[in-house]
Image 1 (spheres, one colour):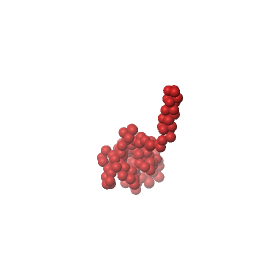
Image 2: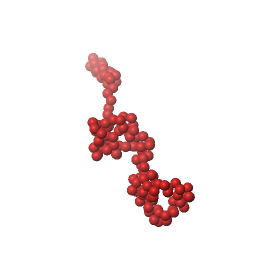
Image 3: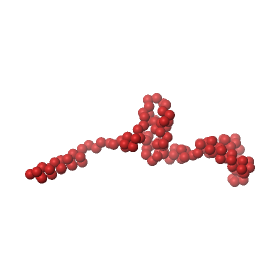
Image 4: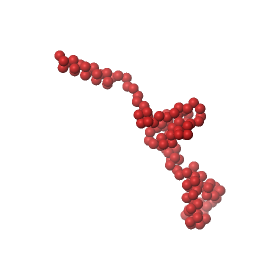
Length: 135
């Protein structure tokens, strides 16, 4: 009889575990990924990215990390991630200035021809080109 009651208990427990209503697990909390909800427009400096159309603010480290943190997944949008990988304007400007200093002011024209010169001239110099390339 003991064996039969143990079997019944095991079957009952398995039934409860398998067929109870499923609870959702917030994996963000499990991994320490807790985001603040803000009632105003401003986010904390340590969570400066605000998800569009919601009050969720997330840290920059969670942008383009493969795990959506915004309800609509905007923080994983390929266009946003491409922009996030671009170097800062200052680095781009410094790189262009060092190229021009090393190879002469007509270096870009030598590389890309007069079409490049004509296209870049209205932009207004190295800093404006750096902004265009980084933005």
